[in-house]
Image (cartoon, rainbow, N blue to C red; front, side):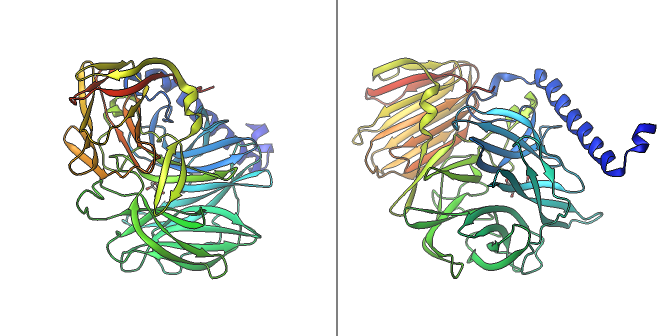
Length: 480
Ligand code: FRU
């Protein structure tokens, strides 16, 4: 005690921080053995214990990819937000690292990361409740690391970025660099509750100038836009947004919340974005909300929360909730973003369990994880059923010749879209312990859905025609 008294208050603060960090990691280590593994995904990022939602801080730093996520270690429900942390050499194998950010007076809401000359800088939203009131305050905080492991909050927080109007919803900064400037887009809303994205610019990361309202909802695109992103691909600019409050129209926008993009042009001089093609959903599945992207070697990679607010998560009684989608590589052809699973995913292939004809009513069985590539004859209806060998969710994937649609039907909850293949006429289907991802053709249609089989996965050909199929079992990714 006397020694502690002799240390100045700065050292005491540091000591407290070190002890609290260690306590959390010990808690996580000690809780992991109580997790029930039945639905735990084998090659998707999941929290070690507790709750996960949106991805944060996707960046390449000192030779590795880093990804963070909204994390509450102490329960399988959303709670005071931390940043969980994983890293990977290849976007396929992901190692769990110590929790990067813990809440203080603020909750650590979503944000992004950037390598600034060897320092990994995190920019995130500090969400602070206002006592005895439904209101809250959202400002932007920074944290730093010089090794990609240990993070320190900037003592001068909050960073000088403020909304032009007095909205309390001002979150999820996405940072990037162009020329001599840093840029940030933030998710927000107008005074009359229409989703909006705000753009800021800085020379030094600390003092920021408001440049423009990049885009705002015309009323049809919801009351709030979360997790925005802006990047260039094939000469066009993509504004990614996650709107809340959109109304479904026919087959589109059927999930509770959406994630999608507007294709347009952008000038760094005027800081104006001109939309050219209306908002489109990025993924057609049941569970896909908020994204992070990063660019390395000219390739743009994307990951999304493999989930959705207000959905049921049967794994919550197992000690964990939430996952990330497979990492996808993006391309833009015409008006549509194509998403392909990251190339290196093929390294998880273990055993080829079928290569050839897959007949009517025959079955492929995977213990937990597999990949099925189906060659499609567009002139015939197709129906594949996915179900556990002991039951559970029954999901059907169909091609319907009459209306040209691919349909993913999860126990009666239908998601579907018109498919006009660009080139390859195949489906690449990834199943994991409680998920399905379907990539059609070159990635012009993708469905990502959480599904919960009982026992081993069975894939059954319910169509009348034999299909040409290659099926692999997939192994777990390396978590070391
Ligand atoms: C989705 C999101 C973000 C917010 C965070 C709160 O990822 O709703 O907009 O910052 O989660 O956990």
